[in-house]
Image 1 (cartoon, helix red, strand yellow):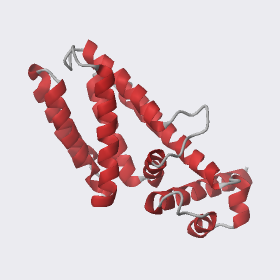
Image 2: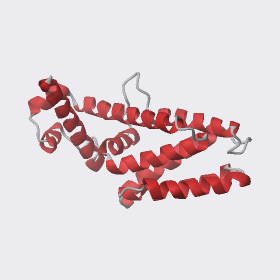
Image 3: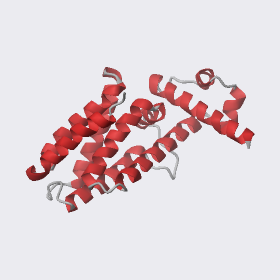
Image 4: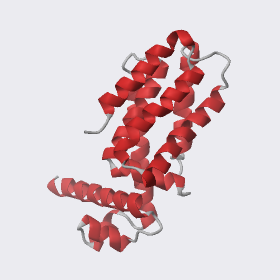
Length: 215
């Protein structure tokens, strides 16, 4: 049991070290030797868990997917409206991305052409599915205009959210992401939400920025 726990800890250490390097210098520019040095483990320990660098990339994408799906379930199961659940999800991802190199590396891998192994879906496909489901719920709840093209809005929202994070990575501290997420929602709410419900969601965006911003 002790040996198993130690092995799991070593695996987690290697993944986190690889994620940190993939995020900071890119997948192609990171070698297994770099990861061994950064994780403070032996090459034998690394190869015990991962036969190749591609295996590490896949492990990171798996963790990113599991985290996003867990956050989606958590925000959905708390009695929020569909639109509020979607807003909370984006703010949670923005906050965790500031704290967790695995989520940041997952995004960089996804935007650099790294493809997960089946049956794992590409992160953008998974996010589009989640966003589409929430937007359809928001239409039923009359929180967004009934005549919007949900597929177009979902695609635009994912592009907006991903693009903000990608551009921000090279231009400003990652802790700025909650503010950028709030700015994104202020624009989207004005275009999507009926006037009678707009104030509620604008206020929510401002509150979520304050609550979820990294310390």
